[in-house]
Each structure stands twice: as C-alpha cells, then as structure tokens.
Image (tube, rainbow, N blue to C red; front, side):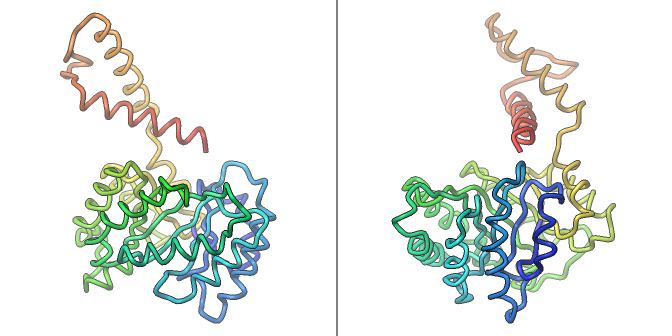
Length: 293
C-alpha cells in the first residue's frame, strides 16, 4: 500500500494498516513542491518504525529520469534505520538501472557495509516492457555482487496505458498481453510479480474480481491505494483452506507413490503428474510465505 510521504499523519498509521508492505511514497503520490517535506518525513518515520513487526517498510523513490532520485537517496540513507525494500519506478532501459545503482552505491557509502535492501523495479511504458528482460538480467547481476537483492517487478498500468494510448476498461482487456508478459519474465528470474492498482476504491466487487484474476495469472500480490482494499486483496491472494488441503494431500500421495516406485497416479479422480505436483507445491509455498510475514 502506498502512503504519501508528505502526510505525516498517514505515515504514522502504517503499523495499523494490516498490509504486507507499506510503501512510503516520494514519487507520483507527492506533489513537486512537497518532495522535500516528504523526504524529511520519511527519514524521520523510518527510525520510528524500526520495531514494527510483520510489515515490510519500503520506500518508493523518484525515477532516474526525474532528476530527483539523488536527493531521495541522500535523505533515506541518512536514516539510522534504512528501508528493507526500495522501489524504483519507470525503469525503461538498462542504462537507467545502471545510473540508479551507481547513485545508490554512492548514497550508501562504504561505511555501511552489509546493507543490502530488496529492490523492486517498475514496468510503466512500452519501452520498459520491451526492455524488461535485459533490465532484470542486469539487476540480477548487481544482486549477485551484493549491491541489493532483486525481489520483484511492479506493473504500473496507468502510466503504461497513457504511454501506449490505450483506453482503460473495467475488465482491463487492453492490458492482457502486458500483464501476462510481466508475470512470465518475472517468474523466469524467480522474483515476485505485483499486479496493477485498481483505482476505484469504492468498488469492492470490481477489486475482488480483478484481484482473483491476477492471482490466477500468476501474480504474487497487488498494489493498493486505500485501507479498504487491503482485506479483499489479501483474501484473493491467500489460498483457500480447501486449496491448501488439496495441495497437502496431493503432495503426501505423490511421496507415497514415489516410495513405491510409481510415476503418474490417480488422485481424487484425476491423473497426477509432475506439473500438478508443482502447482501443489506453489500453494504450500504461498501459505508459508504468508506465515513468515
């Protein structure tokens, strides 16, 4: 969930939002004349939130192309308690990622060895979608060097629609290709894929439908902009008790048949082989991840 950095009252509500990840916002949610105030508020609140349990305290900086990311990083890295995750928006090219990485290293400095936050990048344009694989490959290389840990990709659908000239529809059919490609490439790098925002926060049924659709497509989570959206999204991305029971029993049955030397077998009227086993393991992994949070 995004929390605007210039609103100190909202920042201090973070422990009570019930979200997995609270994104303290420097970018689109903050007007240009409020950027400096947002940076200072976030720097201060990062220290206040250091003992909050179960919530990833993240910061979304401004894009490299904005010319504002240096000041964002300088303020954030001066906090005693630095964010666990940094979100980098509007990554259109590998060069932009490299520039950010250089500036991040400079802001962190050599005196804080061991700080290695998660990094989540955004796809928000046609160019960004085309270059996504190369951007992630380069980011993966920086991860292996210990600069940061590449953790996920976010689909910035509103900027993407504006960039390609698409008209937004309720069923988001105009974004089908982009949504699926982002999942595919992210999963190839074994990182999270975070689905688009549902901007009508007064339409819970529409949010539920789109959230369940995103979960079926393979997304691991969804961006939210209002507290009322949190429970609906959490429910959509959490496997039901029935699904968990199915996965648990299938895995147990598979292991039993493996010990007896059998390959494919029948489980509750369906022929089971390796692909379905992998689906079951994904369900259990999702549940385990939720418990960790």
